[in-house]
Length: 338
Image (cartoon, rainbow, N blue to C red):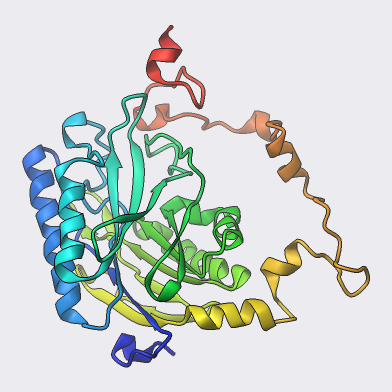
């Protein structure tokens, strides 16, 4: 049930709109300015489209397109005109917004940054993509974890970006931090369609969490993005699904974070987030609360190594035209050169 796409908003409902934004071509600062203005227009369209909408969500690459251009002249800054325009759009239209920027990073490659801005124009969530889509994407790996903010109606909201959602640990971390709604923005192209669909559903069900997921849409003359806006309920059921390839369509649904809370508190069978840390509580009081997963303990010890590690052939971005990196994670370009 989605309240007829949010037309019939309930007392505890949060209405989400997902924008299947036309994939742009952005090469110059003038292109960036025009695309920013287009996003601002669509924030206003979302408000006109549905007066009950609480949160409008734009895809990854909404300002920059899929060129992977790291030219500093078209990178954004948090105190720059693009973010200021997005803040003002939320104020002018009395709506929360989720946005994507490629952010200048003086210490290395740009960050692929996601923002949630409230209806007063304040940034409530700032996130750096943890898992760039290697070897294709050149972005700096995120270094601030997976934040959660309090959104409309007190809902706890998390944000991950595109390839992040292929790692079940990402959605579990968002849920572990309290997210009742997890947004996944993406620039994925058509070959990923099936993987996109089933990971969105599994991320929801495995964590008793609503997920709201949207890609760029249409063609830029080279790439074909798929749109595929999906809102998935906490039981894994798809409650809204956009028309594949329909650019600038806004997919809407009402979701109920109060029912997420009810399920997390009341479910016995398949209460997966709780049971993960309380194995076999029928047999032993409180369940087993150890960590039996080798990959977790190895990763924490910085000793993660696959049994087939030596056979992996693609381990940097040279196959996609990027130079092999020489600095370690956490080092700036200047520190690595010293």
